[in-house]
Length: 162
Image 1 (cartoon, rainbow, N blue to C red):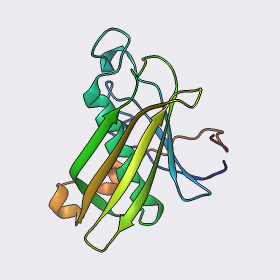
Image 2 (spheres, rainbow, N blue to C red):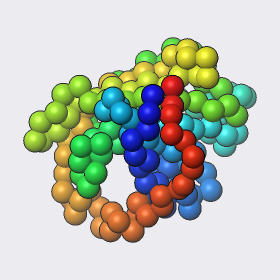
Image 3 (cartoon, one colour):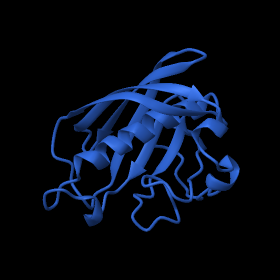
């Protein structure tokens, strides 16, 4: 599937932060079908049992995927998670590239609901989530400049993602 746009990375986020040494440094892409896709590799510092990703990191990635799906339509909007339900399907490995997919399923002026999934290279579903989010003014969420925090546009040559 064709990539339409690459999303920016933040400075500090545990999932996409380029200045955070513990970050997954995930990359996110807006697709021609309106979905968000992500590519990422968890490392040893993200593990629970040896060789397996910690469930909290899996939930954080799914939360990030769903939350970023809003940016396809509203790139300047921020929202906070009010609920997220995760289903862990298979153990998630460390050290291999994984693919995330997310899309909004309901949208209103106050909030939205979305779903996200994480797949391995063979297309097996590893985890899935549904989340509910509330839109908030940037000032309510925190005292920061969104343009300064989301300043990294990491160039790559990815034009298609399965």
